[in-house]
Image: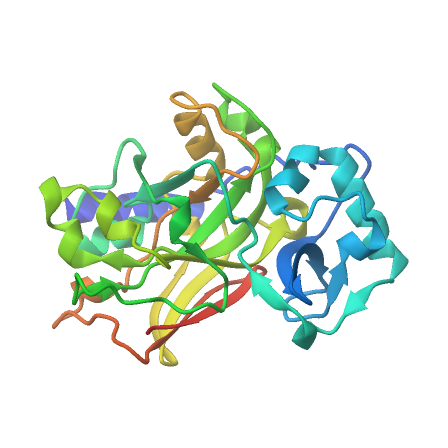
Length: 316
């Protein structure tokens, strides 16, 4: 079984993945890092001027723009073109220290998660590579911002880390073809699929409860439009706990890429703007270490993906 999985991993390395490059806008590239933030007590939509950069206040530029990302995405091309003009104007720029980052999407109708979606993670467990996507969910109430704390639940002593590439749906679709999947993506972000290993093994081995405690889905810092990324399926992905590198892989290890996941899930449900996909984690999680290692109060977890940024969450 291990030899068979290694052949799959070699095939993934030598076979280039074709990504369909289509913009949300019909009027040229967007190249944006969209954020939700709070300033002077108000929730707003903004643009991050590069990873770690200052913030363009989109609502100050145009008061007609929605103040939530979901409504912004629902507004479609009109909203994106206004944001593009705001970016080009060079106006209404806030220092990064003036804002509090919120999750880039806060109220998705659905959070779709994918298990066992990295070949090297399958190797870590000596398990076969799945032939179909393994889908589970988290509740939207688990979402927190890129720098918010993770709260350890009193019901568990085995809370684990999982860095993941996430993407957000930009327009409604059903029964979508794999080759058209990227047309439905608004952008990509960093996610931390915090997992309670106690409850993952209990309750009939259902994963939902183990994944969906409050604060178990930090995301951010920005929703990076797809045309800003060289290739979402060839990005370095890593996790550090207290500065120690614990996960270090590449999204080219994903078994099912973005288009395939959209095609699979849209067979069963209609995808809506704002729906969030977490695409699986690479090897290095705490439960498979010898001996196992779990998060404790005071730990700081940094999840990073090339070209997308870093989220940093303290465990309380």
